[in-house]
Image 1 (tube, one colour):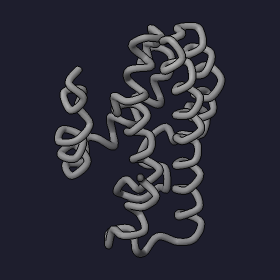
Image 2 (cartoon, one colour):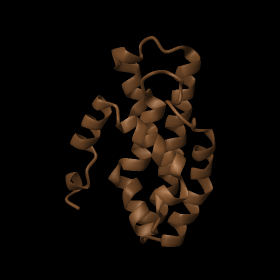
Image 3 (cartoon, rainbow, N blue to C red):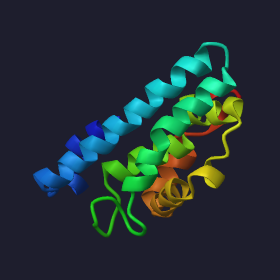
Length: 140
């Protein structure tokens, strides 16, 4: 989803190949995390399986995120940053996994959650999140 946005959004048209590669990297990491939590979530809401998936992949994200600012070092977030928002804020499958896996994302991965918060502080991102990524959209 995020990588498609980068290919059509005028705001991202001036990104360098290196920046686009970093965006692609984060999109693929998000997909890896997604596939890791889906199996235990839909395979019986396996708490230990969800926790194992999160513990395997999320430290990688925590390690490579910047301490401040955005992934590509720009004054605005790019697709890489949006992938982190997706991991932290999208209900399905992420927040549902955290719920059933009893994962306290903020406690275990504060840098990840902080990065999502910085990204969501950007007005356009906040608007998109509030309009499209709520649990209410799934009737939950």
